[in-house]
Amino acid sequence: MMTNAETVAERKNLPAVVLVPAPVEPTPEATLQELADQITQDIGQAVEKILAIGRRLLATRKTLKHGDWERLFKGHSRAVANPVPFSVKTALMYMKIAEHPILSNSNLGYCLPPSWRTLYVLSLLPDACIAALLQKGQITPETTRRQIECLHENYELEQHGGDPDWRWKEEWQSMPEYVTADHSPHQTIRLHFASEADVQAFAQLVGQKITEKTKYLWFHQLKRQSPIYRVDRETFRQLANVLENSVRQRDKTR
Image (cartoon, rainbow, N blue to C red):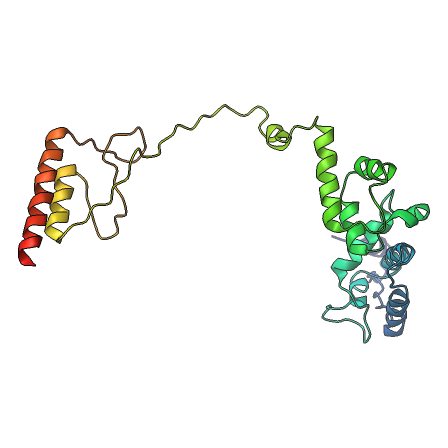
C-alpha cells in the first residue's frame, strides 16, 4: 500500500519519499534512578506518607515511557541500580489507595490505620460500606486487616436483614430445587475369609465380583447409578453355611 507521499511523487515523476518514524529514545538511567530515589524517600508508616507515595507513583507512571516505569522497582529483571524496595504489585496497591474516592481524603488520615496493607484491604470494600464504618467510628488507627474483614461481613449481614444464609440464597436464584435422599447404610459388618476360595464362594453367592482392590459391597438394593444386587434369604442361608464350613476347616488346621 503506497503512502500519500509516494502517490504525489509518482504523479510528479519525483523520487518516492519513505516516512520513517522517529526512534523512541529510552529514559536516561540517571533520570530513572532519581525517580526511584524520590519514591524511596517518601516511604513511611503515616497515612499521609502512604498517600504521598501513591500519588507520586501515579504521576511517575504518566511521565515515563512504556516499560520504563516497572524498572523502578525491586524484582524487575532490568531494575535500576538502587530500586524502590518493593515490587510492582505493591506499587499498584499504593496507587489504588491514592485513587480511592474516600481513603485519598487527607482529612480522614487521623482515623485511618497507618498501614498500606490494611488500607489496601479497606479499599476493596464497597464505598458505602467504608462510609458507614467511618460514620460509626468502627475504623480507627488500631484497626487490623482481620478486623476489617469481620466488619465487612457484619455490614453485609446487616444489609441482608441479618440472614446468615444470604450468600447462597443470592447464588441460588432461579436454580431448580434439589433434594438428596439418605443413602447411608443401616448397618456395616466386617467379614473375614480364611482363604481365597472362600472369597470367591462369597462373591458367587452375592453375584458380585470381588478383587484385591474391593473395599466394600452393598447387600441390599438401592436406586443408584452403580449396580446394586439383592440377596434373598436362601442366598443368606447358603452364605452362612459357607462361612461356617470355613471356620470349621480353619479350626481343624490349628
